[in-house]
Image 1 (cartoon, helix red, strand yellow):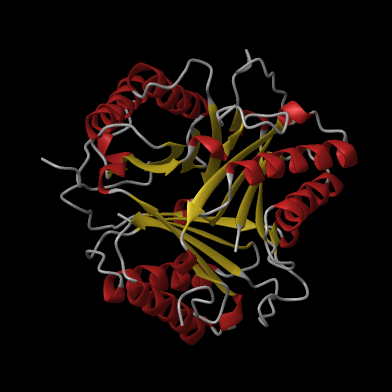
Image 2 (cartoon, each protein chain N blue to C red):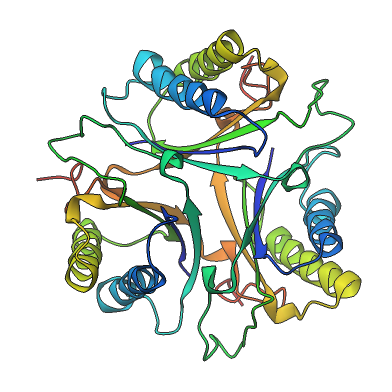
Length: 129
Length: 129
Length: 129
């Protein structure tokens, strides 16, 4: 059910985008309790002045134009601990595969209900029977 | 009040985009309880590798590069039954008008409060007086 | 913590985009209770037929192709009064700096939890210790 929006620089290689996409999906399945094959993502590429971050950094973290912003909408109910592991998994895997600085991996979660999804066919697959 | 994001392939015709947009709006008015003229949508077009779906399908549904992802933010409060009709209406109309496979119509709803909208002029039109 | 998506016409000048971005950030800090430097935004530019609004207007407000759609995800908890001031601040500043009609400034807020954010390093900076 999750829907991930990945916003990334136009200069990022296709290989990098593929690894970011895979990391988000892998984290969902490995620690997020998401069923295998539930992989729906949109990539939007941006010019350098279209991904905006504080030049001076925030909370002691500094950013570069490599910043990747990942916004995930999924069903509510995951624990704080699961979310913590989820964030770490994504940052670790993207860093390991592509050498992106972990500071440049930014994630936000948005919660929806089970009734808020149609995976095709006009059906509400997760709704009550 | 709803804000719809429609993500679709760069190869989709303008005509198809127009019909998808109309179907989303028509479903809102016909079954979603949305007032006429409350039509605010953004279209983002993507390269083939920027709309990502499981090649092997999910929940018995298979997808093609024609996949259209529709994410709608609106005010909370609609019943499960209304949401079911809403999903079906969109898939039926897009399929009827453009021949898009119903499997390739993917919808997610996000709920906000009445106070979370400004339709212009810096005002909170739906807030308490 | 807020994440702002700003959708705007391809014909808008870089200067206009910069001022819109600044207005959203300034409103957050001045009236939204957001800490300084918490500035994370994405700009997506659109063709004229990709930002869709009712030609006939809505709630007595009419729109032009200059319409700017601002969707902000932030932590829940702000009062209705703060949200009202926030909307007005953004519309006033964009109008003052760029002469954009206030009717063409459209804002939606989405609320998330404190646990739903990672500002980098794979950490949950706002979560419980």
